[in-house]
Length: 117
Length: 358
Image (tube, each protein chain N blue to C red):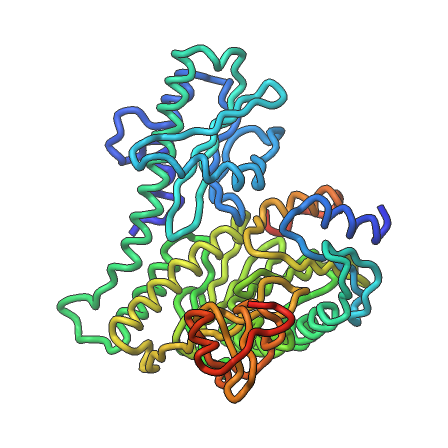
């Protein structure tokens, strides 16, 4: 599945996902799909900023299969490693289920083990 | 206090519980090899699973969608969700604790579950399992909230805070540490294994508070909690309401994510409850947070005014607007004046906005 198809598949199959964005390690959006056909530059930039902080503090290793979840009053941003060069960013609204998101990601990336179990 | 795993073992195997027929025994006697799995899950993942590895885990989204029908009935009515796939039957039940839903599932290989005696027996066992799991988790929550300084010992100024953190560690052998941090990233108190906690705790707090600045770039977005999950562990950190302090918990093992979410929620509620009752937490005064004037509903839509009336105008302005009108959405809240009715706004000399036509 191409990166673009992956993003479309995730947004289509999980009602609580507003946007799926694949970014490079430096925060450049490589592929994206949004439920509302909106620009993702701001969210990509914020995600890159969050990633940079976590890396600087040695809390997030992008070479391993790991994820970070930032929760707000209305939803959450999930940043999850795909490989050493790219990351998946999901913008979620409240009411999401981590189980559902994980199982969806297992279908998209079947060779990865489940980080959330 | 025995750990969660030990108490669950008592329910399943009857070890020292005084239960005449433990659940595993009852299920084995009734269904033998037909019982495939038994699980307890939250929306963040499983707490406990047992049985065949070839049985796929239950569908989280379906469980979540079934929740209103499972919990919406009269208080004493037991409700079950009964589904079949691949000739396997799944009995799903739910209960709510600390405002979070939990699900218990029994998966069985039964040819004719429509038979009344089989169904009745199944529901009884599912009910027993659900009630015991709820009691187990409720008992743990009660124990966390009922913290008092130990009698007969010198009064410890922060004894309650310490004992809440200690209870979090006691939940399971998989809980690595529970940490109270200030906004500068300094550790105030740690329970559990130390080792690299000092360095990790400081880094976590800095991540949390700096994430807030990053996310705040989207107007009206405020970071409540951060979770970092790896294949081996989950760390969760979040602010304690009304204080400048944060609480973090680190959990290892296969069910780390669900454990971390549950324990973080229970500890945060217990610590803030204690803070509001005493007016302080670890010597830090509790402050009433101002009610937000604007809220955000999406990552991609602009914030909107949180209505304090049906109509709003700008102080010194000439027009008034409907509460959801975007024209004043980015106006400083201190410059707004609210009106309960259209007539009051007009009485104040304002005319209706041409865009929202209130």
